Amino acid sequence: MTIVEDGNARQAHLTDLIGPCFTTLHFSDDGHVLGRWQATAAADVAAAIHSALQK
Image 1 (cartoon, one colour):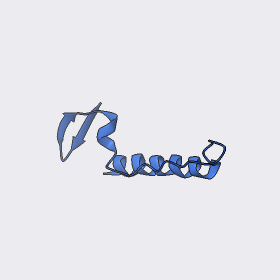
Image 2 (tube, one colour):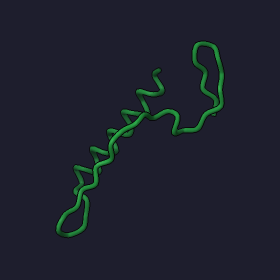
Image 3 (spheres, helix red, strand yellow):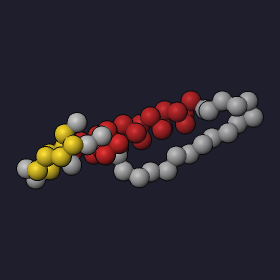
Image 4 (cartoon, helix red, strand yellow):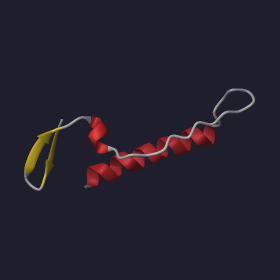
Protein backbone atom coordinates (compact mmCIF):
# COMPACT_ATOMS: atom_id res chain seq x y z
CA MET A 1 0.00 0.00 0.00
CA THR A 2 1.13 3.57 -0.58
CA ILE A 3 0.38 6.43 1.80
CA VAL A 4 0.52 9.97 0.46
CA GLU A 5 0.99 12.78 2.99
CA ASP A 6 1.53 16.38 1.96
CA GLY A 7 2.35 15.27 -1.58
CA ASN A 8 4.98 12.75 -0.46
CA ALA A 9 4.35 9.05 -1.15
CA ARG A 10 5.74 6.21 0.94
CA GLN A 11 5.24 2.47 1.12
CA ALA A 12 3.32 1.27 4.16
CA HIS A 13 1.53 -1.64 5.77
CA LEU A 14 -2.01 -1.72 7.09
CA THR A 15 -0.62 -1.51 10.63
CA ASP A 16 0.68 1.99 9.81
CA LEU A 17 -2.94 3.18 9.77
CA ILE A 18 -3.58 2.37 13.42
CA GLY A 19 -2.08 3.92 16.49
CA PRO A 20 -1.16 2.52 19.87
CA CYS A 21 -4.08 1.23 21.86
CA PHE A 22 -4.92 -1.01 24.75
CA THR A 23 -6.34 -4.49 24.33
CA THR A 24 -8.73 -5.60 27.02
CA LEU A 25 -8.95 -9.29 27.76
CA HIS A 26 -12.17 -10.33 29.44
CA PHE A 27 -12.36 -13.60 31.33
CA SER A 28 -15.60 -15.13 32.54
CA ASP A 29 -16.60 -18.21 34.50
CA ASP A 30 -17.71 -20.05 31.35
CA GLY A 31 -14.71 -18.98 29.25
CA HIS A 32 -16.65 -16.94 26.69
CA VAL A 33 -16.23 -13.27 25.94
CA LEU A 34 -19.45 -11.38 26.34
CA GLY A 35 -21.07 -10.22 23.11
CA ARG A 36 -21.02 -6.58 24.13
CA TRP A 37 -17.23 -6.71 24.61
CA GLN A 38 -16.80 -8.16 21.13
CA ALA A 39 -19.05 -5.48 19.64
CA THR A 40 -17.21 -2.72 21.50
CA ALA A 41 -13.81 -3.99 20.38
CA ALA A 42 -14.97 -4.24 16.75
CA ALA A 43 -16.36 -0.69 16.89
CA ASP A 44 -13.10 0.63 18.41
CA VAL A 45 -11.02 -0.97 15.65
CA ALA A 46 -13.34 0.37 12.95
CA ALA A 47 -13.20 3.88 14.45
CA ALA A 48 -9.39 3.78 14.65
CA ILE A 49 -9.07 2.72 11.00
CA HIS A 50 -11.59 5.35 9.88
CA SER A 51 -9.76 8.04 11.87
CA ALA A 52 -6.39 7.05 10.41
CA LEU A 53 -7.75 7.11 6.87
CA GLN A 54 -9.09 10.65 7.39
CA LYS A 55 -5.64 12.04 8.29
